[in-house]
Image 1 (cartoon, one colour):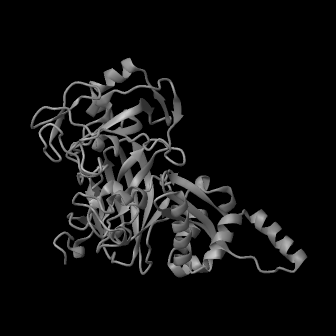
Image 2 (cartoon, rainbow, N blue to C red; image 1 turned 45 degrees about the horizontal axis):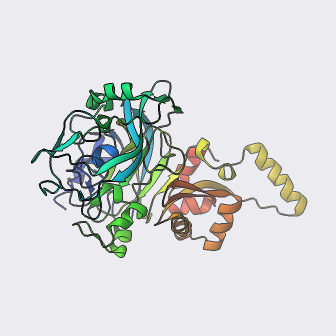
Image 3 (cartoon, rainbow, N blue to C red; image 1 turned 120 degrees about the vertical axis):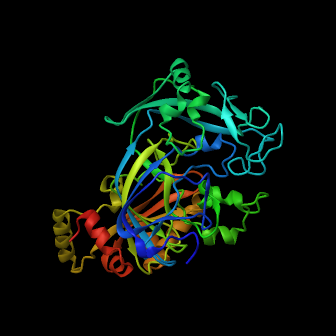
Length: 441
């Protein structure tokens, strides 16, 4: 048994996780648990993206939970994560379009920051005052953040009514003075609150809240920055000059595409993830309060939050990347199951033309990732063909007339959704999840 894998003979039925990984995810990290197959996992997560980005000690762009071993999960299996509850705990956050500060990183500002004044790599730092020069190196006192806003905003939340509003500079300055509390940073979080920068270029914009997790899944087969566990961000690891540089082959074999920024990974959905290390190593973070398709600005509203989910091991379902069973409201219209009345009408239509067999099927979504949207789409389609055994061209046809391609994130994460025959879903071991999720007979 690996020294980082807990004894699976002593699984617990419920586990609460409030410890984090400082930007790295991989098999070298010790796992908590194990959590029993069917058990409940509860997490409190700090914001992703901007907080870790402006904290030079971080070696990844997020602050995700310590991974959890799942009893019975072996390499080549899959783990279904059934999200029961999700709640934003931050009162406010800040986000926007980023730009890099040259001379403060080695190849990748998310991964390899250093102080340009004293040369310390991943220096400890602190906050002095507010504004874009507030992040200071502990060793020499120089301003040290590798990131700036080219356009930013501060936004406050009403969790009960699921609405939010961007604020003006005076309000932003006030929030910056109490930034960790307004961000609701968990006790053990190590990041600085992005509210300290107080960038408020877009006041008065009201927006719906619809929280989801941007980084959730299973541990990759090698250590890597948590924000780079995907193909589009991950491409920056290929040939990188820092310690996490990889070959293209190593990246694509190891990653699990946990960082997918897919806005339908929210309360009520089921996410089915590949197991690439013993115990699976389930982790999560990077909750967003809201985001449209595509995360066009590069970053959305990263918040602290609480998530509760249950786990189910799916034996012998070998996946390269995640499968998502979206909420009915999130499914593209062409992939929504037909009502009983619609199915009756389809039967009548078939009888008029002599087509008496009507396929029983259910919706399934494959996450595809790649260097750009074209590559991501091809990847998602190929994953659908590989997993289901359907011919690739049939997958194209199904996704065209009974499915959809949707953007999850620019530059290269998509959702490939199609209606799949139930006998195939049963053979994969997930037919019961699809029937339960969509109330199919």
